[in-house]
Amino acid sequence: MKKYKEELLPLLGKLPVPELTHTMSQLVEWAAPFLTDLEQRDFEKIVKQFSTNEGLKLQERLELHWQETEGSWLADFWQESYLNGRGYVQSETNFGLVIQDEAHRCVSSRAEKAAQLIYQLTKIYLAFVEESYPLEFAKNKQHVDMSYYENFFGSCRTPTIDKDLFFKNEQANNYVLILNEGNYYQLEVIDSSGNLHSLKSILENINYILAVKQPALSGERDLAYLFGVDRSNAYQAYQQLNRQKENAENCQLIETALFILSFTDGKDETVEERVATMLLNGQDQIFTKTLQALITKNGSIGFNIEHTAVDGVPTMNLLAKVFDAIKMETLVTSQRQETSLINRLSWQFSPELLEMLVRCRRAVEEEAAAYSIHHRTVDGIGKNVLKELKISPDAYFHMALAVAQKDVFGCLKSVYEPVAMRGFYGGRTECARSLSTQKKIFSEAFLNKEKAFEKAELTELFLDGIAAHSKRLVKCQKGLGVERHLFGLQKMVPDSLDAAYFFQSEAIKKLTRNFLSTTGIPSDLLESFSFCPVDQEGFGLYYGILEDRIVLTISSKKEQREEGKLLIQQLEFYLLDLLKLFNQTDRE
Image (tube, rainbow, N blue to C red):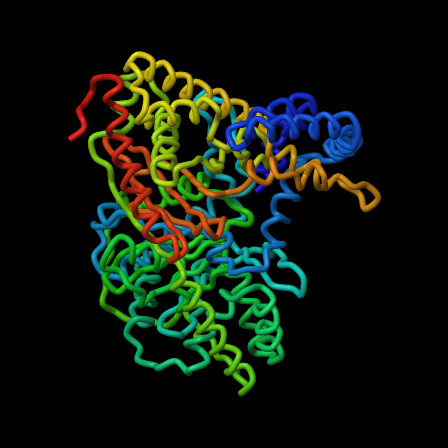
């Protein structure tokens, strides 16, 4: 895949290390909304001390690291931060999504849907291998990073005693793995000449998998759960599983498979049930596999994505290609059953391993039950309305979110907003921390019950917040944000240097708290998209700003269920209510 890595590298910018003085001045500004006047003055003193002492030394070390790194100074550090996590990957790093029924309504049966997904995903994999997959460009016609696309295929997280490893199969691969009711099947998708097997042939082998009535052993039914427990227990169970030679060979097949397709028994009657199934249901899901497609009993299609080495925007670009191709593909139907391409995996279970798997299942089920998800679609507002007003849709959304948060909680806490840095090789994402002083001033004024602000004054404050938001995002896109620079500086701290007074200061803790962790990926392809809250008392919020509507999905721990429900309800209200500032609609 040299076209997307080595050959693309010189066409992209190299992710910069911002000037220390720039980041420190921005840091003071970014932290201000969360601090009292006294806290702000104390923090300014801390920043000044760090900037003229330890910060200079760490900046020098980071700049040296930048010089010695051919690609991105951030990439390896950022990937390592995921792999160091010791919790449940499905709730700590993964994201789940559900595809709109309209995108695959042309394909009727579950077998046909599975065959199409496998066929189209494998075709994309081969396009990358053959370097025929088209290069992507930004709106300004500039090249964007594509180095991470290879990580979708033949990759997996594997547990070790103190941290996970990211495994990427570098050899040519020709199979995927299919899970159905505890049965594991290896399905060959590419023949010995490197050609993709026909859609009809793949379909007929899947017909057999769905038709065969071979009850799985209890250990087989519980096996997938070991991939979803906390990483220390996952390591112990994985070691126990691999003691048997046949099991070890099967685990290698899981790790090296191009991707996994699972027929899930998870609930799928409502939008919330469907996305919860994709994200958290551990039966027949290998949560550590980078790319896993799922098909429910009622034929809904979704995906679970392990986040270590891929991000949301490339994921949706990939899936858009898949479902566009499905719509264009000549429909193939067949009731014939074939076994020429499949191999059912056989496992060996000791009594000790069986007990471990039962404990794994209970732990994963408890983890899934610990979360609550709410979904809403807000009609009457979207890109079309906001573009007519010449307002950034993303900035507008975060203004409404600030007001909703202030209304529901009575105060403002930090909001994580990822910003793609695809203009740089291996850039990954920056965090914009969308709450600003301007948003705080507006939300307090808008909700002020003691003083009635004039509409013109509110509109001016609102537009100040919009401008500040857009300005911050542009800086982040250019690699000049605050948070990744702080992350890099902290990675440079040697054992002999004590900078905890700065990195562990209350101001930085307040700024970097992910009370509201958000992601906004607009796509008509999505019914819903969700991830678990990063902060145990906080919320995970997806928003998709489409042409004529905004799609919202919020997650929280069960303890915050009612607060999450109220927050998304008030967010819907203010998304529409703020339009009154521009005489577009009235509050009903």
